[in-house]
Amino acid sequence: MILQLKNIQQKKNGNKILKGVSIDVPEGSFFVLMGPTGCGKTSLLRIAGLLDSPSSGDIIFKGKKLTSRKKELLHTRRQIASMFQSPVMFRGSVSSNVGWGLKIRGIKKPEIASRTEKVLEFVGLSGFAERDASTLSGGERRRTALARALVLEPELLILDEPGTSLDPAFKRDLLKRIKEIHLQTGTTFVMATHDFTDALAVGTMGAVMRNGLIEQSGMMDDILFKPESRFMASFTGVRNIFPADFAGTEACVRQLTITHSGIKQGHGFLAIPPEVIVLSLAPNLTSERNRFNGTVKSIERNGTNWDVTVEVSDIPIIVAITTGALEELEIAPGTDIHLSFKASAVHVF
Image 1 (cartoon, rainbow, N blue to C red):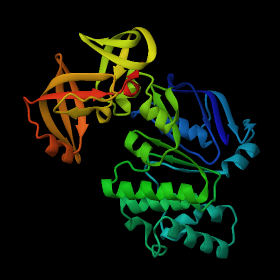
Image 2: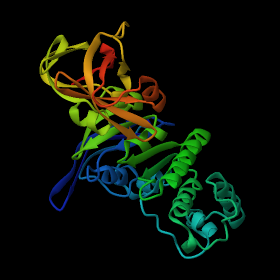
Image 3: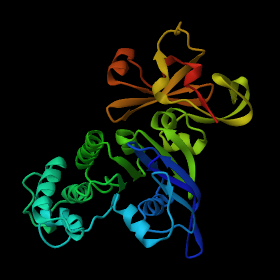
């Protein structure tokens, strides 16, 4: 592990911001810290970047527990670079902004010029070296800040909400470039975002925060497809979340019995992702354990796809389908329809 935070607590003005947070970041990974605004992501990133000290807890970098000794902290901090939401541009050119960190470290001018030119090309800003930094757009400022961090050749790069407030096209391009840089350099990235879609675009693993605590952590696919709580299911965009009474592999949602692949007793919740449900005009004679009849209540566009709400025993279930599937089914509100989904597609918590 390149970075381990153990039972990190942070208090500000008597308020607990972080309430015992622990994360492990493997070397070379792209670790994404997710959660709603105000959950403590930025506070944790500042501690990870050694910009703030925790009220209590341990910071372990490359297997070594850090102390409060200034010399030790400075040595470690030089292996870490951070880029925060609103990067400050100093007066002068783009190249002087990018090379600033190298200059204060005593690197000679020819090497600064060489490394600056290389990293500007890396982030897609070739030809911007002599531009006045004050004239840059929001997206260009973020790329310049990214270049300023990368030029230091850190072992750990920390990014706080790099796509916030950018136009969708600029954000997609920036995240794509960040992902490419991670793959090409092998540098460990830790990024915070409140947008789960952004996390999926770049991350290999991560953790979701809520109210100063870790709600769930692990590989991105597990976080997406195996939510461990109702909050997690909602945060990751899973819809069709229902309270249920469980008895082994069966769950009772009102009068509807749904089969799942786990073993659970008592009261809880289940979630059925809209993307896993199959619609058909005739009964679907497949291996799916869950097959029901329903009536189409509404059809709404959702980006390039469609959300079809089907009422099954007075329970509204949302099904996501493509435009092609919608045209093939030729359905409308009031159409009788059959839906099916596998037991393994049902999440229980």
